[in-house]
Image (tube, rainbow, N blue to C red; front, side):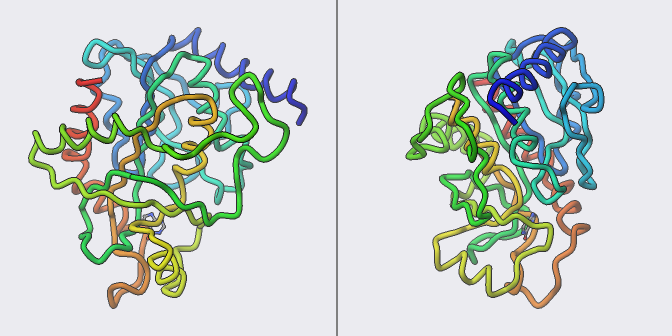
Length: 274
Ligand code: HPA
């Protein structure tokens, strides 16, 4: 697609959302288990992804497909109930379209949440992990193709993919809530297969603490356009080969549900203090 066609697509989606739901300064991508957090928004309006021009429709189980916007702690906050993954067959441009829309809607801070497999032996399912940095093992980059110069430069710096001040804030909020927030490196595999035990050993050697199938493309596109990102993973399971049991999506969802109140309290505490 040409730059002009891509820009038109992004503007069409943003214009529609602005009209229906308004603008926002903070955006939250709700990973598995966190979808109910939209109920915390005051005066919420929402629109189904199906009705947003150019938007893909999320197909992953446990992921809804609605854009919400409302007021939370006196701030305008939009929330994505359901996100797009590369493994669903969407191109990188589609997976990250919402991030560019956020930029046009005025978003300055993006909070990305996800479910991830724990690679670090010090983690336990149910732990929350502040994402310090990422490793991209997918072989994909959402900025491949002509640069969208209205959003950012050709070669964006990734020294601070996750914002230093936002990390400090999350750690402070966690301490105040007595949440033992772990920290670590999130490694993106494309999926939809879970990783093999050999891949997990490789990821550990490379410095990964958690593995997952999302978040990195959104982070890259957010940073390209100057949005500050905070990333938090819920360690829903130990990664492949670490325990003597196979992995299942049911386990991932059950852990997500078990810890969702704590996860939500952490995100909410951060938004209150932004
Ligand atoms: N691997 C990849 N993605 C995941 C996992 C995992 O073990 N758990 C939750 N999402």
